[in-house]
Length: 509
Image (cartoon, rainbow, N blue to C red; front, side):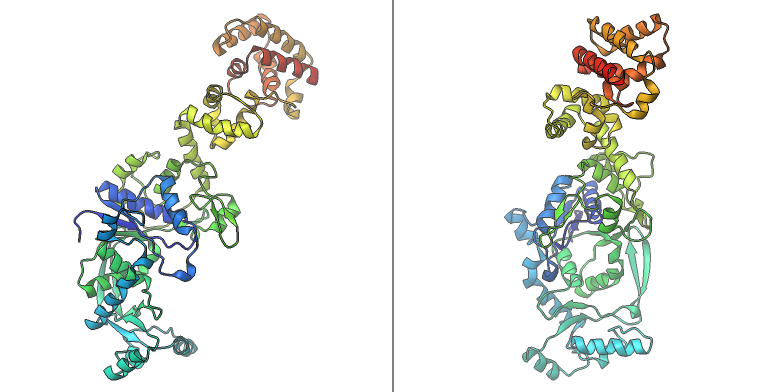
């Protein structure tokens, strides 16, 4: 086995990549990069009945968008393919049967000829007695397999092309001592394990065999996967022993739980509560149904990475915002939690808000300009950038910008009724007309100077600020929101400010 750290992310192309899978990929990537190792992508597509067209491309595109690139995968160059490939299990079919037969030869596996109907009958008989049927040491010699049949009978069945599977022969009366980087020492009684099928009658391996063979041939040093595979750990360790191979180290990641904390997070939870559970939008090729994605919902890829890292892992410090490089430096499998990680949709928005604040105003403005175009507004990038700088602290997403900043581009066509009743008093129209005159006379039209001049006028008139500033905002914005009112005036300009004040006076009287 390689002394260099080598890990793999091995999804099945049976649909879109769930964020639980993304987190598994991320933790593998962080661990590999922390130790100067390689991160591999292997597509486990042996179950052709569940294969979904476009799912493999979706998995690859998702990793590209998230910027957690793999070092080796299905599209790697020929020299990598020749050493470790192919990276699709369906293209490795020719490998597995020989390994399964090797296990038969060395006494770790056997042919089983029981039909599905016969096994169903055994299950029913056990259920009627209140028992559970397990195919293993206590009954395998009573069943139809190469352990109970004579060599001649077995050979005849093989010559007659009878359907068979190859089962693993689990040892009896052994306390298996297993290790998990996250969960510590685990002891399993081998007597409770069943003799799992390793090779099916259709000529395809099961996950258990293909997974072990591939990990060995690809020099995988650490297997980091979801806790749903924990029950398979004993079998996998036994398979390494049966082949006389050095086993990798194992780490089983906690589940991502529903926002309520009860049960595994599903697409249904996202649909019900209004958040995505996939990195990118997915269109089902059979039904045409579209599932939401974090990318299309306006999340930044680095915000998604950051919040996923904190689902089940914590650096042990107060720091919550981490760049990818910082995550690599801080990440340790030993700090991954054993218990499930509750998904918090509000926290994901909080992360996006934090990342939005860090983004360059011009970059954000370039996205905002396309939204403005949809609203029929044409503007230049410089003006849009200045607007973004004034309003982004109130935004979680770029899509919030129009709601927060429309008044920078179009005059209000109505005034919020409750605010108008409260702010527009008997003398307000007169004050607004006078402020319009003051504005016309200002030469240095910077926010700071406008504020100085207007506040001086308010003082000179011996008016309270409450009589002038709230209705001034209402006249400019249409409601009681927005950044510093003098920043708004400076941005929209003298003529537009005066025009809005006159229109408010006419409308609100």
